[in-house]
Amino acid sequence: MTNKGRISRRNFIGTAAAAGTAFALNPGFAFAGSSGNVGHDKVAAELPAEAATGLSGDPYPSVHIPDFKIADGPFKPNWESLRKGYTCPEWFRDAKFGIWAHWGPQCVPEAGDWYARGMYTEGSEQYKYHLEHYGHPSEFGSKDLCHLWRAEKWDPDRLMQLYKRAGAKYFAAMAAHHDNFDAWDSKYQPWNSMRVGPKKDIIGLWAAAARRQGLPFGVTYHVSAGRVWREFMPVKYGSDVKGPKAGIPYDGRLTKADGKGTWWEGMYPQDLYGPVHTVNDPCPEFVQQYLMRVDDLIRQHHPDLICLDEALEFAWDGIAWLGMPDLAPQIAAHYYNSSLRWNGAKLQVVLNLKGWKGAPPWIKDAFVADTEMDWDENKRPAPWQNEDCLMGTWHYQRDHGYRSAESVIHELVDIVSKNGNLLLNVPLPGNGAIDDAAVSVLEDIGRWLDINGEAIYGSRPWKQFGEEQIRFTTKPGAIYASTLGVSTAEVKIKSLAGEKIARVQLLGSNQKIEWQQTADALVIKPVSDWPCPHAVAFKIDLIQ
Image (cartoon, rainbow, N blue to C red; front, side, top):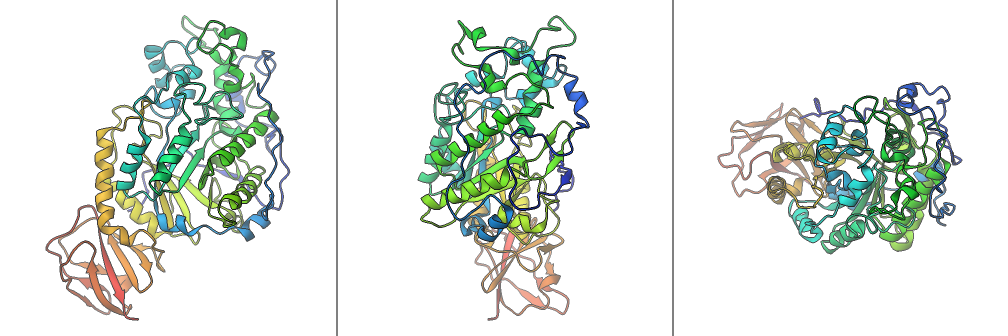
């Protein structure tokens, strides 16, 4: 199995290597090489001419943001210090399979990914859906979706029990997406789930539920200058160019005074939408707030894993420049040093970064590389993680349908053979009640892992990842050969022709397995009764 035909929605094009030692904080995020703003004209043209200067007079941010300070400790904010001091923890290497809740206000419409941007894009399907179900974005905007997100049927303990039955060995929750709304009792973002919407500390409740089940807990954080400041915020300041609402500004231009008599009275829209700006304007206040929101997550919830949804390198994604090579080492040093305090001076945390493929190889020792619906044909020397989705769209989309358990199992087997982990997003609707169809798929995956988990959990990659429809893993004294599918024919494994084999077993079966070793292959005779569908794992004990 390969990932051919399944492509990431981010096909990053690296433009500069994140090399060197300490990077100075670039508070304006004035990206290198962006003075000409190649490709920005189209986005900027969507905004009124006065966008860059049409400030409301409201303070931004409305809360005091202190200076970001890196926690004391052995890690310094440069790649040399980070790569020498960091080692991926064994719990992550052993876990192999995690489940993720990519869940927030944008799940309320049940209309797919990036809704908080699409609803402001005149003529798009999400814009049309929004008009039909909620009204015009000048009257009902992204802030109002936050208000509608109530999580009224959400039961984190019940869900965590399900995820554990499905075989997950760690769990991650989305702390904030590109809509800029924080799903915890955020100290530096007033638009958060304790004040608006659920009136619950979503991240805190997720963390407690995961830890009650003995699962390491992670967070994914999708607020960044590239995505939020440059891609999601500016579209909210525009207006329709045709139709009955042409020229009427969307709600991104509202001020605190406009909220009098509304449900959001007393709140500053700019805290969610940012001050009116174009994609070219610097954002020192936003960057400082971003750093302190990450710091707040670390201090409050002690996550075992943080996945930052941003490119390590500078990269152009067709809309705006992404990349945080100057911020990544500062966050890494702060996170690693902070974690030593709550982990008994042991480094037990994982930082995932994306957009790293063009960076110098030695930089990659400083974190755990992360990909998105996109993995290589070959194994990697260092541990890594691929994010994927059970639904095919990150945010919940009604009637979209789910992948089969078999497709997820094959992906997991393939990734593990290449030294990776799979973090599987299981989308939830806004109310938090998981679909029966999703439960069925997860329980199917769990049944398979109950039988074949020995070939997955705690394994390490063999000298080669596989051949044809077979994938290898290893543990001391044994090689595991997992088949991608189940066949009534004999199984020939050419890569094991020269190995000193003592015995061949089929996981989950008491059958005596008939086998022989030829000069060309290990040949396993047809098996009369397979223990499970989808895939099977043979354990090949070696002569010691």
